[in-house]
Image (tube, rainbow, N blue to C red):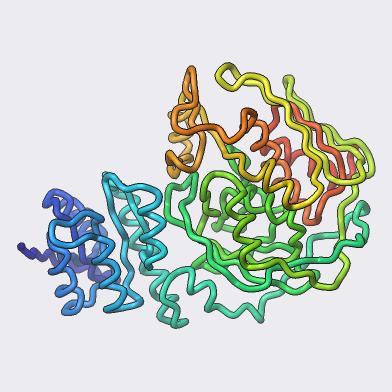
Length: 443
């Protein structure tokens, strides 16, 4: 195997990048991209030689291909992390799967990129890896998610959501989780590897997100909603958290009222539903905190409607959701009605319903920079005549997922909801719009 070096010096940016790939064209192209940005690069075709180079040169970031002629990329990753637990490794693959991506992140990779690499994705990945590595060195953490666990948040204030006239005290207790945990996965819309740390919070704290590695705090509240195209995004300043609705749906029904979620850009999509979040919560344990929780009790009728779509929120003793969906075949008309009674019923009837998309919309979704993480195992892809990539879990899985989204979005009011929701052909934007009416007291 050969080792080639390209040294480019730019004032203020002199970090060394090791590129490991069995395709000479990739080595040349990526070296050129990074050289244009002022980075120094060393390259090799060999996994074994990569370990020698790393030990000798201690590069700041490593680009590592999954497939190598002499050593599997994941084996090389493991060896690099054993050599240096703080090694910032960006995995690359032209034919990887979501399972491979998740496995590499669990093993300590900083990021996972699919070939062909774009100029921006390569440069952004390096800059993000460098920023994270500096934070890791400062805290002694060994990964971006360990960094989330390592950070002490004693100086932060976690204010509960604003009180509204409709808020009442319930006989149900406030809840959090019994211990901190990490969940790994891919972002549905970003396509990037992502993961999140969940940690308990004391009573009267609420649900809060913190971005990693920047550390920006974003409460899970309506006032921080920035986008509702295909998913619900929360934003504060330049930082955002995408696709919060599937996690919030599980938290809402589980009655978890106090939780800290540290996340790298986007909530992991997992299998495209809420059921894996539910299972994880049960595995780590849900803890009653011995303090009565507050609930938002709908006191009048609220309605948003437009061009045949409508969403009505009205009083009800409990939480009830009715959703009517209508698409051309193979989806058709679907009506699902679900009364939230207990967590087990939600896990059986609603939580497994996956997000979905239509082949005809893929071009527009991609142009918006969304949907990049859609894989064969984390969403339902609908063609002109049939579902293309999976077997449905329910005949009406599409409408059930809409119920799931509504339950999640409605938790952005900040408190468990007591009311009846009747929705027809609506989406995230309507879910948020009706909540704004509640906050404004406009019925």
